[in-house]
Amino acid sequence: MQKILVVDDAEVNREILRVMLEEDYDVIMTADGEEALSVLKGRQDDISALLLDLHMPKMDGFAVISDLKEHGWLQKIAVLIISSEHAIEVENKCLEMGVFDFIHKPFETSIVKNRVRNAMELFAYKNQLEQKLEEQEETLEKQHKIIEMQAKKLRETEPFNRLMMEYRAAIMEVETRLKVLNEEFSQVYNRNPFESIKSRLKTPTSIYAKMAYKGYPVTVENIRDHLTDVAGLRVICSFPDDIYRLADLLIKQDDFILLRKKDYIRNPKENGYRSLHLILSVPIFLSNEKKYMKAEVQFRTIAMDFWASLEHKLKYKKDIESTEEIERQLRACADSIEALDYQMQDIRDKIK
Image 1 (cartoon, rainbow, N blue to C red):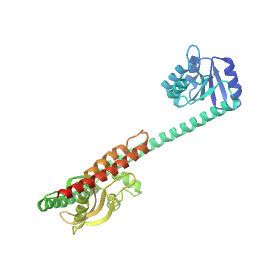
Image 2 (cartoon, rainbow, N blue to C red):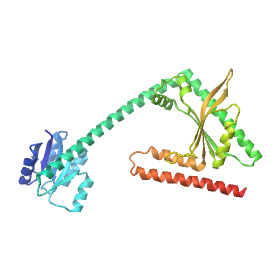
Image 3 (spheres, helix red, strand yellow):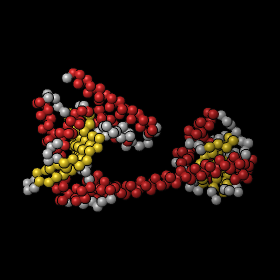
Image 4 (tube, helix red, strand yellow):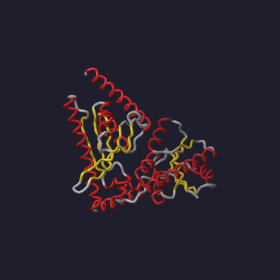
């Protein structure tokens, strides 16, 4: 039977509660806070609920709650306050300290039983969830260590390092074509179609994790065949129409092959994310051969890039409240940014 500790300096209250609950629970009784803590120190893992009077000699209920909190027992034991008061200030203070519920005098058997049962069931459920979360965290940590070990082995292999060299060459090839177009625009139109280019090569750890997620063995051939974003470039433009103009010019390069196009500017993601994504097959020229490598090129305005960077940081924050409200505000900001982009583009056209 689950154990309940009843703490009250009035013997009559202890006896009434014992009679009400002894059919369903193993009821332990103490007359003051010090005695209750003495019992808990040896049996805190066995006791499921604590029925606690607030007003007692030697050590009152508030001091007992503070001690439970200090030892971390308040997270494991459901505390219900025995009280004849209905003062809002007292109840608020108890709830803020971590008390689960109240049992008011005079005692009504059905209410006492239901409140104790509900408290114990919810606490048991909460503890089960916490245990599952701890187990999941341990599993994820083990998986992460395995991925790190495998990624380290991957970095030490010659075929993998050669593959990474080829992806770096693809990045340089795309960067060169974009810089040439930028020079041409600067000469012919006296303006530049983009502000900056950012590039990155996926890390071995990220590659291994993504291949495991997709369910493919981690081999050079599988990385080449099934990943499209090992080589990534982000092109930051001033105006939305520059994005489409520059993307079209890049696609029209006679030795570039467009594999996939995702337009999240005209069709934004639900969270408000906007960007134009191209998956290209890019030629690289090695000492003894020409071969094609995949590269992902993302086009954004300065405002779109600012929003995406901020959203990424916020998304990976933990223990945040009101996530729905934050997501709503982020979507509203994304819409405002889009309107601003087109307003600035309109001003540019008027100046021209």
